[in-house]
Length: 333
Image (cartoon, rainbow, N blue to C red; front, side, top):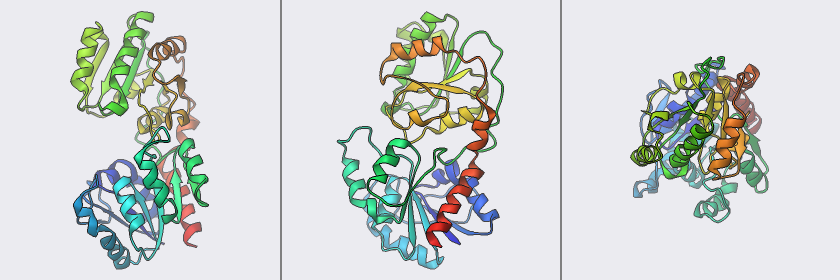
């Protein structure tokens, strides 16, 4: 089978699909990746001129370039991922099958402009892959071919299962972009309540973004500077290993990769009950936005042992890649 993998930018291939591509190549299939920027991964790759992460005037010619790309490599099927690439691919006159791998519909409530776009294009793909139960229900009501990958794209084996740390003090980890959707301020406020309920607790926040300074100032204003470390953008693995649990505060997710990585390493997560997050294995949830309830949930349910290693085994990226490959083969015949 000749498989095309299309994303808006190359770093999406690096972050989510490198091991999948390797699995398909090892199985004897031909794979061509494409994006608007070069990935770091050593994969068979073609640059699509004019393809961007966000909609732009240069996108106008992209649908015909995608058709030419599919013809050049005689592709049997294209898997498209990320919003701009997936929209343009579904507008293109492709000579092959198209599978829309949706990382997450961009709304948490019904009234959202993206809903209109998705409703108009939903039948323009031969099949849809979805990774959370809410999106699965939305697509299943509108399309006959929907594959539900509850493990997302899977977790690499470089995130091994480990025992909980032996520290008596509660250690938590938050990771993500410091942007409004991730609500880092609620993590700081929840930690202030956790420290009050369980003195000596500590939170490490990983990542950067426009709200990082505001979060640091809020930690200072609440008097929890010493209880929160802002570690910047770095490798999350040692911080997951050092934590008893993960803290997550987003308004919605497709399926949060950081929490899957944590589960694979044996770590429970504490979060709000929102789309995508509620599908994470072992997640403990409180009502959305209720910081006090989240803090009580954490301090009343401090993990005493790591999650079952079998949870991580089921979500390894090579196993998920084989499931997706089976779906492609059934679609293409």
